[in-house]
Image (cartoon, rainbow, N blue to C red):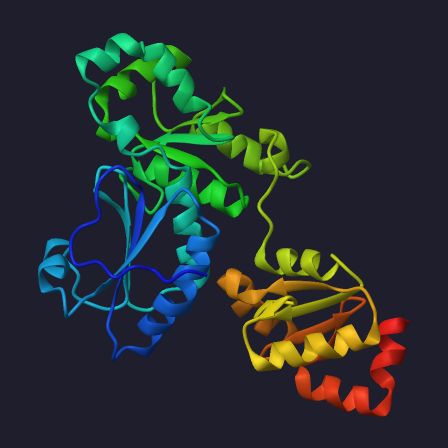
Length: 327
């Protein structure tokens, strides 16, 4: 993973950006800078990531009203802050915010079009593009983390409870879209929910769908439910009979412990799969709780945790490792 640049000026416009304000004396913020942010950046190719040392860059800190570290800012491509997370942050919440930023239609959709742009793209064409910009698209007042009305807030909560990934558009930021979508959809109020480009309806319709216990909301919308972290981990464990969770990859381990356990498996001459926990901070932290094992590498066989390097060394010396991995 490449290092995240330290900024001394606001990021240039034109890109959605995730900024982390940090301080070298704050251990959690250093960890976020060195591990979490690079992992998020490696899986988010459409976003730009940057770090700001808060006390060394007082002008930037003042500009963005940053008073504590760590602070995450999520910027639209026009530079506006769409979400903010301050102080103690949950990595899962940061990951979700990154996903929302990637899915959201930001400045390109919210800026008033020029006369030339209007000629190039009629309003109905623009609306058609917006409603199809995400499999599930919510037109709401405000943003998912800062709804500006109770109805929008409830819609967001129901989608999140249903573990449904969705894009959003703040209709308060663009009156042309706000008024035009009412006619386009023949629906007079907000929020409005679209799935696969088709209007589902407003909050009442969404409530009725959620109350239908016979069919999950995701299935009713025709989309795939997002996996919970534990479900993701369980799926990873099923990827191969022998799964190694390590720092780096077998051909390029990123720590000595991982290198040693790779060498043990290679000596056994068995096929196995590996997962680089440095590329997914959510899995890296979640697997520690899932397995009740605090360190890496971790070796699994048939979905069961065998242990880390020390246990594998003991098993290798006793001959038990060969018996186990060769089945």
